[in-house]
Image 1: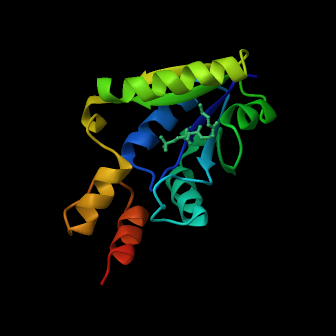
Image 2: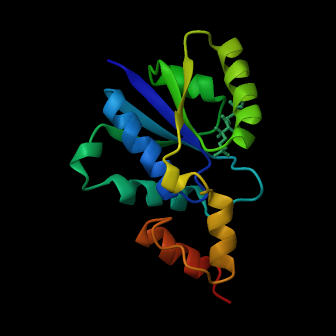
Length: 162
Ligand code: PNS
């Protein structure tokens, strides 16, 4: 069985993340979405909220029945190895993503040569999208329709209600 891990902080999950998860689910027998506990920069959403938003987005979609969502608080390669994964799948949006992702991919390969990092090009309509941008737009009451799920939209509204 070919298993992939899609890792991230998912603070919060965006339509761009969900696009990569869905495309990975067509290539692999099983996809584990790994939500990193220690999201950098003081996450807006708790780990439970971040997990729930992703689970809400995939539940009820039969094409995503091979996707599971779990948290991890360890080296990514250890999480991937413990799940029997042969690949780490990540999305690449722009050249600016490349340097950091290249470094992480090299280090992960050094730590665990049996696990490959595979990059998928972000779909054009999400090439500009990031969790940070979504948070900034929501903070100033901008429209995030289509960028996140309805549940995340409600969560953002609550988080920035004053
Ligand atoms: O969504 P993000 O914040 O870009 O995701 C980063 C993540 C979670 C993939 C990365 O920080 C990670 O893999 N963390 C786990 C710890 C680890 O393995 N670090 C070494 C990578 S070289």
